[in-house]
Each structure stands twice: as C-alpha cells, then as structure tokens.
Length: 72
Image 1 (cartoon, rainbow, N blue to C red):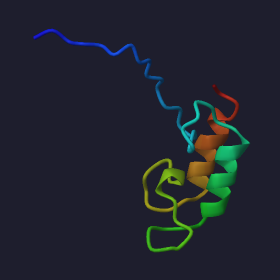
Image 2 (cartoon, rainbow, N blue to C red; image 1 turned 180 degrees about the horizontal axis):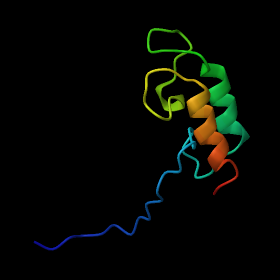
Image 3 (tube, one colour; image 1 turned 90 degrees about the vertical axis):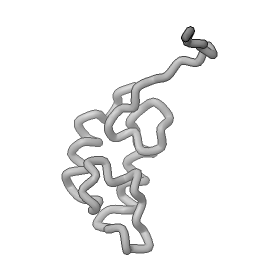
Image 4 (cartoon, helix red, strand yellow; image 1 turned 60 degrees about the vertical axis):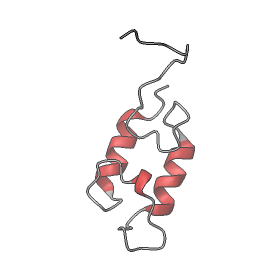
C-alpha cells in the first residue's frame, strides 16, 4: 500500500506549549497561572496546563514550562 502525503508539515509539540502555537511564551504562562493549583474537579481546571499529566497544575508543570520558555 502506498502512503499518500498531503504536504502538511507536522511540528513536534514542545513541552509547555499549552496553546499549541509552536512556542513556549507568556501566553502559555498565563494559561498555566489561571489554572495553577487546580485539579480535574476544580472549575479553573485546564487539562492542557497539566503538562506532566498528574491531575494537578502545580510547580512541576511550571518547571517544565520554564525549562522550555522561549523555545520556538
């Protein structure tokens, strides 16, 4: 079977790029800050801000975002 390619370029996601715009910047930090301290049952929960997937937006997620801050 031959694979058909549509000519799309897929960029790998960067850990901390919460809004998936291809860079880790202040917009991602704002999203994380708005959800900071939340868990899945919290009204401010944003699963995208839970970068490490441990069901709480915390300092561990902030650390990952900070480590990649400014990366395109």
